[in-house]
Length: 162
Image (cartoon, rainbow, N blue to C red; front, top):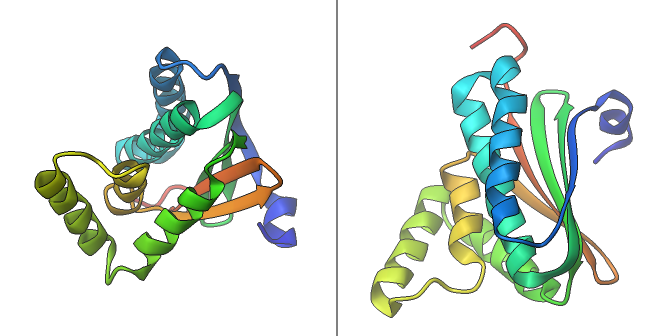
């Protein structure tokens, strides 16, 4: 996040959740309820899905509590999920793979083909691809030691413009 964004971002939601499966749905519904009034169904659905997918990854691959934040930035809304993990290298590799695809649609198609052909979802792949393709988000990762923050940022029109 740039200095200018730090100066103008607005924290919309902050949650610390236990690494338990039932928390995934609680985060999704809380994010949806928080975002819907200001951003409408399409953006709220996309970002609440992104929050749920990232928390699910935190529960699957992380250790300890999962911190979820939703921020309004200039021209975008960002969901960030932070937790401790030993799988940061795998996460960075998956996001690099997604970025290397010709388009989000291509990444989605390849991930689904992998599921059909192999009969299993590759570690962490489909949820991240859904965030990019279905959610229209850009992913980024920050790592400090064993602590990882994954961000899903979705551009938004100016308030009052749909």
